[in-house]
Image (cartoon, rainbow, N blue to C red):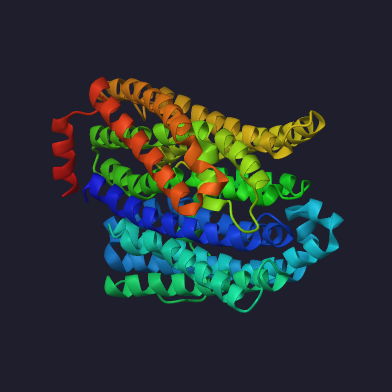
Length: 526
């Protein structure tokens, strides 16, 4: 497997998914804005979506892939299949039981998921109903994650990277079905969306099962048994899921706290969706591809190769993430306005969402660094160290979110801006702890090329930020309300294009990349 080709495959399909996701969010904002139905659905979707990201975006596989790869190497496909079927049986049994209990207990669990909704009984009851409908999605996505881990170990990334495309297409269709039935911004429209989540989970599961069949590696559902392999998976898996999913747990905590403020849940959701575009394309691609690659290098005793893969991954991540963070921080209003401001989504929603987005963006490089640093631990079957740091980060984020939320509200500022500040700081704390430990253990040594490139990337990103501010000022009249969406969209395209041109030129000027590297990259990806 070629590392850059794998990055391109996963990142490219993730980009398609996120574009469809933006179309879905645009349609959702138009249909529901940030009112009661939007808040209720976003809470209902947040919990199963948390598990989709925990399992589907690499956290579960931080434990599963090294163990599955070891069985594959030592015992061949038969031993690997037996281990995967043990994991499948245990995972399915636990999640079926969890789903049944959660659906029954949801009226009480909602006091934990969105305590602020209790002040509005209609919103609270709707959130309970929608969460009960969406919760089985958790089971589907957990099984999808296991099947994805099998395919990823074999170097097959297409099916696992395409599952989110299925989700976004299904929910986009559900929005227009609800609109066609006359459920525009009504509770019934939220119910249609919740049903769409469940249908998407079934379709995603079918896609991965088909992928396994095409690769002649079908798995059978057997009676669950506690084997040594399953015990090891549990021992590694629980810390791995906590460590790999800290970003999503931070967002979940933010949602719980934000439920105290009307509209805050939805505004946090829209901002989260925007800053997660680069996080998904870069961070997830690295998280999915780097772990099998490093694990394979270490099993072969090629520690130099593992270090090179980590350095190139960090270089790739920073080259794309740092400018994205700068762009989202300095020109958030045009982005939010063009994508969301229509229908039920007002100018006030744009201002609040843009403010949250600009702060979220400051933590973006940290969350991508976590995706780069964590595989160095996971590949060595050490999931406890990242888990400890994730818990420290999570605790700091929770306490900070609570304190800053009420402080900002008392000061007359946007309360959920405090949640964004705490989330960004929590990400940097986690990344810093992982980085310091890798240096201490000698698991990640920055090479000379990476050090030079990082300084040049920072300088190039600053140049791009200045260029974006100037371009936004020049294009300001074209974002005026009377101009209409086509002009707004064209102005945003010009703004984004200007940023790309300035950043690309700055990379060449500073020496972050040169034409020889571009040719070599093209050859390696080819």
